[in-house]
Length: 312
Image (cartoon, one colour):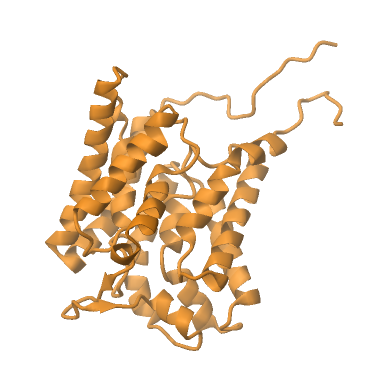
C-alpha cells in the first residue's frame, strides 16, 4: 500500500492573521510597560518607545534596501523591539537598546529569511548580545521611589545570601529594582491572562517551565525547602516574563505536543542550572535561546508516526 506523506499538525486553517497575534502580544505587554514607565519615569518610557521604533524602522530600511516585501504591518518587529526594551534596565543609555534592535532585526531575523525563519528569539538573542557587549550597563539597576542609586536586585541578593528574605509582596507588585518590564508580576500575569483568553498562547509550556524551575530549586537550591526562598526565585528576575512572552514564541518553539513538554522542561532545567550554579543570578534569556537551538531536533524526534506505518 502506498503511504501518503503528511506534515505534522496543525492542518486546520483559521481566520487569524499573524498580525493579529503579534498585535495581541503588544497589547498584553502594555500593562508591564506602563508600570515600568510610571515607576522609573520618562527615561524608561523613551527606552521602550525608541527601542520599539528602532526595530520597526530597521526592518523597513533593510527590506527597502534589499528590495524585499515590506512586512512591518505584521507587528513582529514591534514585538521584538518591545520585548528587548522591557528586558533592559530603566537607566540604560538610549543607544544601547537601539543597537540591540538593529542586531535583532538584521542579524537574527532578516538574514535568516524574516518572520518564521529565525532559529532563535530575536529579542532574547539581542539581549544576550548586549549582555556580552555592555555587561556593566546591562546589569546596573536603580532603586525605586527616592532611591535612585545603583542597587542589587532581589535575585542578586538571594544569590549572594540564600538565607536572605526578600519582601515577596513587593516582588509581586514590582516595587523592586530590575528591568523595565520584568518587575511587576501582577502586570505580567494580567498580560498573560489576556493572551490565554485570546487563545494566542496555551498555558501548558509556561506552567511546565515554571514548575521545572521550582522543582530544580527545591532539589538543588541553597535555600533548601524554604517557601520564601522558592517564591523569591519564582518571582525574581525574568522568569514570569520569559515563561509567557518568550518561551511561547511560535517560530522558535516546538509544534508537537510532546516536543513542547520537552522544550519547556529543558528550558526550565537550564534556567535552574544557570541561576543556581552560574556566575549570574539570572539565566532565563540564555536558557531559552539555547533551547531554541535544539527545537528542530525536538520536532524531528517527536513527530507522531503516520497511521498504518510500522515504527523502526
